[in-house]
Image (cartoon, rainbow, N blue to C red):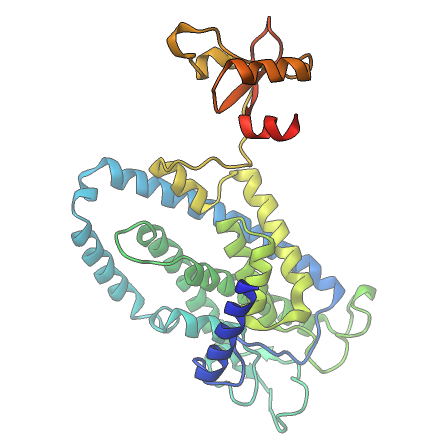
Length: 367
């Protein structure tokens, strides 16, 4: 009940402060006119695969750079490194308006649907007139502004990928969620615009699985939805999260009706990422820094002798428990004759290969 009460107070304070300047208590609130279609699961899965590839590439490159930092003289001058990276970031980010703007603003721009109030180049379509804000978005050919935005977004993707590799792990509180969401949103928006233009070019002769929903003059593809799915895919590829990732995306966007595309993309991203490397970015940094963390997913071969990991006191014989042949009377005798806090579990008396470890208190409860 304490956690529930704390969450209640936090939600009340958030709603009272209204930090995002709207009636919604989420950072990137989205509301699309068109629902997603079943055939769109194919590009959503493709975004998941791309997210897994980007995440694996980012982890490998970032860990390589962090190892170089630890083993070179660069690690002895963290302040100089921060100043140099900040200057390089400002120098190369300024010419491109998509890298010049705030990352949260970029994500929100990529998530939003083109409408009467959106005048950015990414919504520059030919002969698309919004005579009524309540009408559906008409399908249209991409204009010069859209193609210019695609080139700029591609350069922004490469820049954010490279600069995040160098910034994550520095002696500054540099986060990873927003850069990962930004990279994924860029990839998703590019794929979404590509799907939209494919439907525009062939909407008169689309195959049967489009179910006639894209044969009208209304746009059935929402590039902003692809940006949201791509953001989840890249973040999942970097962190290898699944359930918590879907919850985070729902909390950020409020898009509960898009849980299935998010789930499909996040699972594909995790499968691809795990195939290329089992550790996420945080697990990799824990392993790199040598923190005492025992991961439940790690597998260990039972080839170690119990005597190698536990030494008896005063040269006494090692008190062990066999995994199959130890009786209750023998357990009681072992606990009476020793004062150890726990006992190793071995295969047998003759083959003392370590299987596990059991605490005295667990044996007392069991017997």
